[in-house]
Image (tube, rainbow, N blue to C red; front, top):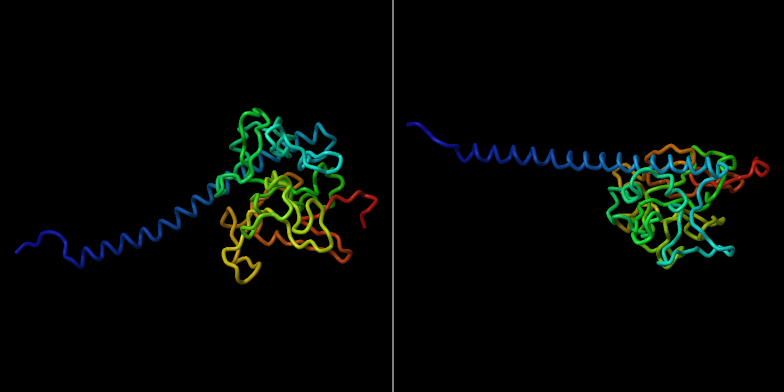
Length: 262
């Protein structure tokens, strides 16, 4: 007697095979998506590097301002009470669409800081990148290791650990100026880490260890260095390291005029 169709055992075997294939393909798909988003984010940072380089040619090899401020250091705002940041400095040198360039495709917030569009004040832009405030308007000649100093990085306006920055630049909307945990723009002897990086803990236990941190991208935080090259750094870049004289070491060093160097 001829048998038509599949037996229950054969159906079960096919079902198991399909589940195995799906279990393999789903992680692979997520990995490919992360690679694509990481590549696009690094492309954004390269575009920012080109714009900053053009800015430097016009402004004596100095880096852009992290933010605009009055003489007493109070951050300036526009007519909509939004912060005036480094984006204003380089917007005229950016060739690509600002909205695309300033927002990381992997940023789950879609850009957590809102500024006015320098090209059209009736529009807004959302930022996914932060500028390291101590390098505001610094000259490359005053940086001991420009190839190691981080200038711009993936960032969240609320800081890490899901907590709000205790010293916001402007009403909780910091305009993405990466600063220190215990001071607004300059480090103190007690400074331990840089705030507002796109790195946070998944759980409260175990402290600051790599396995307990996550970021926009699977391998860490995308950064632009002061010399213009880009890279992906591990979450450990949060921590502040000092040499024997107490000076900050890369990647969070400060400008040092040649007369003050060792």
